[in-house]
Amino acid sequence: MPAVEKALDRLHQGVHRFDVTGRMLLLPQMTPFGTRLLAASFRAFGVPAMVLETYKGLALGKEFTSGKECFPCQVTLGDILYFLQQEKSRLGRDFDPERYVYFLPESDGPCRFGMYNKFQRIVLDRFPEYRGIPITYLSTQDAYSVAGLLPKKKARYFRRVAYVASVIADVFDRIVWRVRPYELRPGMTDAFMEEALQAMEEAVKKYGPTRDFARLYDLVEDVARTAASFIDPRKPRRPKIGIIGEIYLRSHPESNQNIIRQLEAYGGEVVDASIAEWINFVSYERLRKEKKRCVEAWRRGRRAAALRAAKAVLHQRLENGYQSWRQHQVYARVLRHLDIQPDHSVRHIEHFLDHNRHFSFDIGTEAALSIGGALAYVHEGFDGIVNVFPFTCMPSTVCSAVLKPILLEKRIPYVDAPYDGTTQPNRDVILKTFLYQAQQRRMARGFHTESL
Image (cartoon, rainbow, N blue to C red; front, side, top):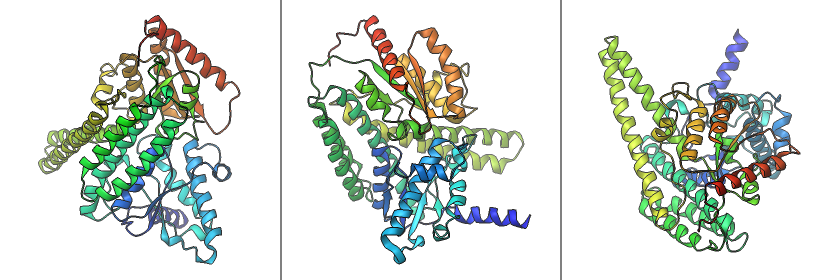
């Protein structure tokens, strides 16, 4: 028992929240735009954050895992081990583990990713030279509160800046997906958006501390206006494909073998579920939990507890309203110039679960978003759905089981795309067949001559 207690104490000490100001914060890459703007948000508040080079350390990630973990764990573990090896080799005796903090968010509920920062702590502790590197995190349990990571006043403002940055990253993604399939010259959209991203990183760092969001919105609008001019009006509109699934796999191009580019190469126009959608879902879930806590405390006659829960409900309502307001502002600026796909509200997604007939938010997990989001795509006229997830992912497997019969009945092309780092020889054939079916569906609906 003492050995077990010692191990648990080590996990508690090695994975915790603390003020990271002044230490190099290491962020594993997920969505290319989003992670870089998150790092810029941290830098705006005095934290020298950097995005880790990704996927080069996959062999390391697999070496120190058993294969029972889901793929995102192997990728992120490989990223941090590769970076530390390279950094130690570069600095030699000057390598100081206490200069760094590894940032690895977690989720509560049944998703295994909620335990991976603890697991990766155990792996890092196998290397004596890495034991001094602490791991910090944000959690869905408290709706990604940053309390403890920054001084109290900074934490409040950082969360707002980071949220707006995540929405801007989503919008940048949607600009790319709307323009790139129809661009006048191959590669011009990607090149321009890389320049736009660098400009936005500097803008977030400069205007984030004062929360001058109008400056960020102006830059977003300029980007949308310019990108809209890249569209070749002679190219016909393609079938629209909606991507759902596990947030890391569908957002990380290297892990999903660039499935969005593949689908575009085979003739599709793709929209992936947004990061802000997940953040809004987490905030919405927090509100539902606080409401239940308030009602339960009142029924049991615990007036003080009910009052505390009621205050928490009010606070979360205000926070959710703030997020919705900021998200609307960003999208409105872009939609003046370019018809990107608007984002789903969480209530809108819940509506398509048909009063819990298909699934319930009470169950939780990303399956609720994926099922509701897929049906929302169908309602909006999309021509096919792709479910991207790590091999053996439970929520996405549940999602697949629920969606397949529903979409079959509606005659909507659907395909599962599980990934574990290996290359499936028939993946290209599957995606080409899927796109052919989506194109046939679009033509059957009479949209084959729709103009841009």
